[in-house]
Image 1: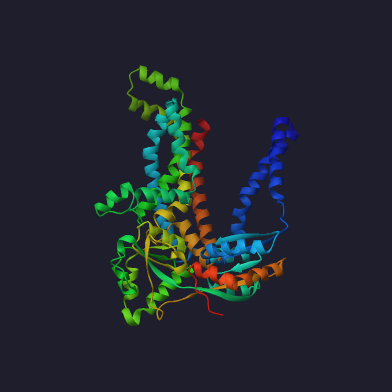
Image 2: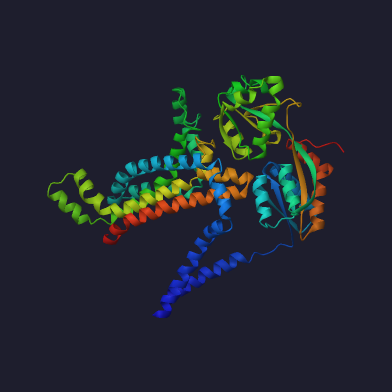
Amino acid sequence: MSAFGRWWAAVLLLIALGCSRAEPDRELVIFAAASLREAFTALGKDFERTHPGVELRFNFAGTGELRTQLEHGAVADVFASADSLHMQELERARRVSSPVVFARNEPVIVVSKDATGTIQSLADLPRAERIVIGTPEVPIGRYALQIFDRAAPTLGRDFRARVEAKVVSRELNVRQVLAKVRLGEAQAGIVYRSDVAGLSDVGVVGIPAEINVVAEYPQAIVSGTSRPSLARDFTELVVSEVGRRALTNAGFSVRAR
Amino acid sequence: MKGQRLVLALVGGLLVAFLVTPIVALFTSATVSEVAAGFRHPLVWPALRLSLTTTSISLLVVVAFGTPLAWTLARRRGRLWQALESAIQLPIVIPPAVAGVALLLAFGRSGPIGSLLAGAGWSVTFSTTAVVMAEVFVSAPFFVQAATSAFRRVDPKLVLVSRTFGASPLRVFFRIALPLAAPGLGAAAAMAWARALGEFGATLMFAGNMPGTTQTLPLAIYTALEADLRAAQAISIALVVVAFCLLWLVRVTLRGSLEVA
C-alpha cells in the first residue's frame, strides 16, 4: 500500500506541476488562419524585437476551428480570419469588436507537374483526370463552387457539372488540397495564391478576375483581452508598411494606402 | 482493509469520471430535437453505411491475416522475433496523419507499388479500397498485440501433448489453440474494430474526403464541424451510440467464455 501510495502521490505531483505554468512577463496570444503562418511568423519576430519582454504565442488553424475555440472561451487577444463570414458571426456574438480587412487572397488553379501541358486556363480544368477541391463547408471549397458557377456565361452552363464529374475528393482544408496535387495524386486543385508562393514543383494557373472570388482576411481584437494596447500594436503592425511587405511576399494582395 | 479498498475505489473512480465526463457532456449539451436533426443531416447516413462496410471488411482482413501471425509470434522467443513484434506495433505510435502520408508514398501514384498499379491503369488513392487499407494499417497492430497475448496464455504442454499424439500443426492450431484463445481473440477483434471505426487522419490523407466513397463517420463529423458545431455534435453522438452498442454486444457474447478462461 505505501509503495502504491507513494507512486500515486508522484502522479498527483506531476499533474499539479503540469497545471501551474510559469507566466512570461507579458504574453500576447494570436489566433490566425493557417494560411497566415508564414507572414505572421515573420511579423512576430519583428514585433518581439520592438517590444522587449513580450512573448507572442500563435495558434494557426482553420478559420472555422479557431471560431469554435473562441466561441467556447479560448483565451486570445487577436483573431485574424481567412473569411469574413466567421468574423461576422463572432462579432454578432460580441467575441470580437470592429474587424478590419487587412489582406486579400485570390484562388488559383494549382496543377501537378504532369498536367501543366494540359491545363493552361480555367477552361481546360475539366480536362484534368482527377480534381481535388475543398469541401463546401470550408471557405476555399465554397469559393471554388462559386467560381465554377460564375464561369457559366463564358464557359458553358454545364461547366460546373463537367468539373465536378472529375472531383475525386473534397478536402477539409486547403493544405490537404495542395498536398494531393504536389504528390501527383490529383492533377488539379483550387487553392489560394498564398499557398503556392515560392513553390516550384507545381504549376499555377490564374483565374480571370471577372470570374474569380477574392477572399477577404479581416482581423479584430478579441473582446475582454487583458492587453488591449499590445493587441492594438500588433494589428497596427499588420497594416503597416512592414506588415504589407510580409503579406505581399507570402502571396497576399494588399490595397495601396 | 476497508480503508484501503476505499482508496482503490476512489483512485479508479477518478479515472472513470475523467473518461466519462466528456462523453456525457457530448450528450447533455444537446437537446433531443438537435440530436434528431443531427441524425437527419445529409452527411450522416452515407457516412454511417460506409463506416460499417469498410470496418467490417477491414476487420475480416485483420482477423484472417492477424490470427496466424499472432500464433506464430506467441511461440517464438528469439531476438529477431522480438524486433519483428516491435516493428508491427509501430503504426500504434506514429500519428495517423503520418501513417496516411506513408501509405500515400508507398501506394500513391508516385510510390513504388502505386506506380506499378498506375501502369496497369489502377489507382487506390481516393477509393473505398484506400479507406479499408488505412483502417487495416492502424487497427491490425492492436489485434496482433492482443491476439499474441491470448495465444501466449494457451498452455504449451497441451500443444506438445497433441503433437506427440500425432496431430498436425494445423490441427493443433484449429482444434487446441483457436478454441482456447477464442475469448481473448474476440476482445482483440473488438478493440481493432473500435480503432478502425474512429480512424480519421490516415483516411483523410490517403483516401481523401468524398461523400459516399471515402467519407466515413469521423470525416463527416470533421466536415460538419467546419460549418456547424451542433451538427458535428449530433453525428458524434451517432458514432458513440453505434460504437457503444457493438462493443457492448461483443462483451455480452464473450462474457460466458471470458469467465471460463
